[in-house]
Structure formats: structure tokens, C-alpha cells
Image 1: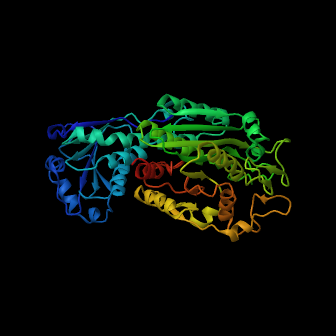
Image 2: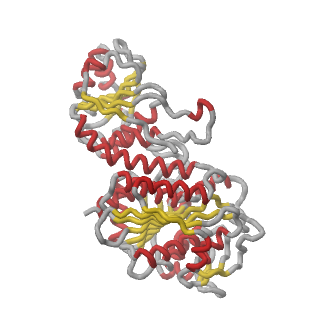
Image 3: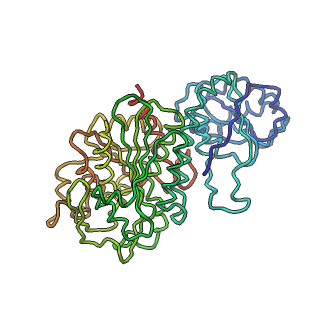
Length: 491
């Protein structure tokens, strides 16, 4: 699995700048005032940095954006990367600045002149996030991660090292999520996925795996119906982090459909290869749990992922089948391609029955309808509790991860009533598809459980990658959920 680059924190050494062979990154505010490191770069380059800071090209840069000054005279460096950033910048601007450094990093060594700037851990996190490169399925030289060393020179190295611990843990969680989502379905099967999560026990998580026999005994007819056409056995993996006191845990639930053909309601062939990412919700839950364990979070959180594969075999579930959930509700399966809600409903009910959580958040690449509504910039947020939803939205905003509140209500719930069973797995008509899916899940939420449903179909692997991620899996949600847990559960 991919790991973040090692970053060496060093005391500021102005005399080392002239002979550094590689890329040097400097931060310059809008007024062009240079700090110690930038002044030394300016002197060595015979005023080139100062002239650029006075130019229209610099004026056009937005906070966090960068331009290279290639092969500066008087220096051994191949380039000076000039990043526009105020001393009192926002966390998102600092992260964007770090992403600019990470994006430009190749096999060259990189030296970042941080000087006396505060809160540089956010910049380093941005660098970590953008430096990610998925190489696991390549061969030869293309499989090798970037070789260049990353160094940051600051006036107080010990303070920055202390700040970095949380950033490193978050980066590890995001990398883990991205790797899981990027892996192809012939590599990330339900069994290999479960094995990767069991290995997280080495970090202090308590991990257990429920097999099909255990799920059948629990009455999970919805989940088992989805996977019955696959050679890969369905599983539920439970990950517990007990870092708090005696309080009830927060429950995170992830949809883990490792590949979704649509089943008998077969998807069109064009674009079906993207359905390797239909386990994105489970990927995010896994990344959050890894982050919590790495930073030894003082909170109680349980993560549960339902791992299945939806295939059109002779044993596969048919449109028109009626299955019984663990809750006891009967469900008419109208469309076998609306399978994620069937998986989540049983896992959500199990989580509430067993762990009595203080709150529950499910994540799923659930509907194309949410992409029609919100595009690739925001996840859909559905909730039965305004305070709980507002807490997540605030965390998502603070972390720069787009999220938008969507409605639920009894009129939408009417659309999933069935004439043959208690409910059906899709709504009547084409309209409000992401909302009727949320209402299906709402039926498996106990009355006293605060709940959020996150439809991440548009953000898990966006068409246009955000500034802090390369093309492919984004890892959306790890940072927002970790922030929410820090803000609300680590009192």
C-alpha cells in the first residue's frame, strides 16, 4: 500500500540554500515582503524573486498558487517555486500551498523554506495529499514512487514536529482510502479487503469478520441477497477503536460493493469499469479508523463495512424477489442495481442492535441522482438530526470537503411503499432518486439514533480532481469525519 513521503524537519540554515540541488519552495505574501529564507534566495538570484513579486504574473496568483522560476542564477537549484501565501492565511490556503509543492514534486529533492511561519502542519498535509501516486498496478520503473527527499526548514523544528503527528495520521488514512478505491476488483475482492482490514489490528483496532453463516443466523436477507450471485463470499468487517471512556461509540457504516455490475438489472457496458469504486464508502470508513488508531484518538468509534460483489450469475437475485431484512421488514427488489441500500440497511440495524451508538453515519457511492443534483463538488448530506448534521457540515467546511444538506420527509418515504412487501428498493418514478434512497435507509434507523447518510457518488472519484488530489480516488470524507470526531467526541 502507498505511504506518504518522509518529510525531514530541519532548523533554518541560510548558508545551505545556495548549494541545494533540487527544487526550493518559498512563500511570498501579497505585499511582496520577504522573510529570512526568501531574502537569501533573492540575494543569491540577484533580485529575481523581488522582481517577480512586483510583477503582474505574481499579482494574478491566488492564495496558495505557485509559479516556478527555473534555473535561478547564482544557485544550484533547478527551480525556485514561488507560492503566494499570507502569514495569516487560512488552513485551506495553507493546504493548497502544500498541494502546489506536492504536485510539482518528482524525483528531485525539495527544500521548503518555512522560516518562522505558524501552523505549517496544514501546508505539510497538503503536500502529503497531493504527492500521492497510485503505483501498485504498474510494473518496472513506473511502479517506483518518487525518490526525491522532502525537507522543511523552520526556526522551531520541535514545534513543527509536534504539530505534524496529526497531519501524518490523516494523510495515512487518506492514502489508505485512495489505495482501496483505486484497486481493481480482481485484486480487491471481498476476502482481500477483509484481510487488509484485519491487518489494522496491528495498530490497536479490535477487528472481527462476520461470514455468511453468521449473517444468515442474524437474518440479514438484504445483504446476503446482493452477494448471492458472486463467487466472492459476502462479509461484514467490524473495527472498534476504544480510546474514550465508557460512553457509547459513534458508528461509521460503509458500503463495500467491491464491484457492481448491476446484477440482473445489468448496467450499460460503457463506464462499467468505474464500478471498482463502488466500495468507496467502506474505503472512507477504513481510512478514518486507521487515522484514529494512528493518532490514538481519545474517542470511542466503531466502523462497520459490508463487503459484497453484485454479479449476474444463475444464482443471482432477481427483480421481483422479496427478501427479509435483519430488522424484519420485507423488501421487494425492483431493481438489483439499487443494491447498496440493501447492504447498508442490514449493517446499520446490526450496528444499532449491538453497539447502541450515540450517533450513526453511513457513507456510500449510492446514487447517480446525487451527481445530477450536486455534480462532483459536493456530497449529499441527509439527516434526521439538525444538530448532528450541522456538526458534520461545519467539519467538512473547515476541511475544504464539499458537502450539501439534502431533504428527507414522509412524502418521499411514500414513494418506496410496495404493494407486495413492506417497502421496495427504488422509488416510484424517476424523481428524487437520491432522496428516496436516503428514505430507504432512514427506515433502518431507530427513532432515538442521530443519523447522517452521506451519498458520496460524485466526490469519491470526481471527474475533475480537487487541488489536493491527483486523478482517481480522492479520499473525500476522511478529513471531515476525523475533524468531526475531534470536535465533538474528544471532549
